[in-house]
Image (cartoon, rainbow, N blue to C red; front, side):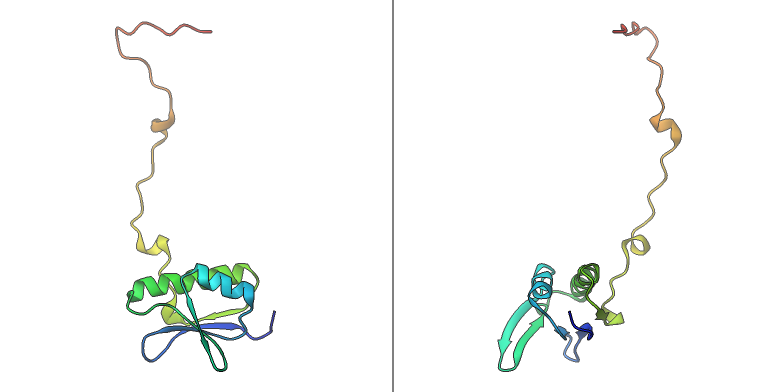
Length: 116
């Protein structure tokens, strides 16, 4: 691995590009996150597909950055691409009460169960 970070940025045209030292494993992680690779004269152009929406692009760029970071790569993710964490965007579910997990008695008129 290189000391230089892998940079995931949004270009001026709105495209999400990857720059930096991308080896075979990092390329497979990026492919898993939805990035496409295009050969060029001086290397490979790695980007997300166009026109899938900023939310989708942000989620996949964040996912790629998280997976690469977990694999111990240095990653610089453009702050504009950071997806909102689910805890901040989703409503908080109501807490279950403890009574939902306790045993309840049988309705009146029901014969008792036999013990084995």
